[in-house]
Image (cartoon, rainbow, N blue to C red; front, side, top):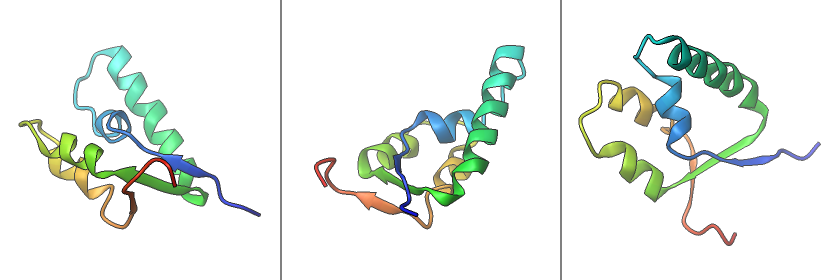
Length: 80
């Protein structure tokens, strides 16, 4: 069976580690965590642009968000 290649952009790690407690934010965090846990059979890829965006700023879960990408392939070009 071929693996699906799934491009992960900034919103996935951001919502996965969401710290706001409003009902809408908590729901998005839950949906994202559930989706993420089901993606383990897919080939997950991202780009330097996503890592750069996550590295900027001073958000409370920056290190946790970046750690999600620690074992991944990076797409240098979306044309692959």
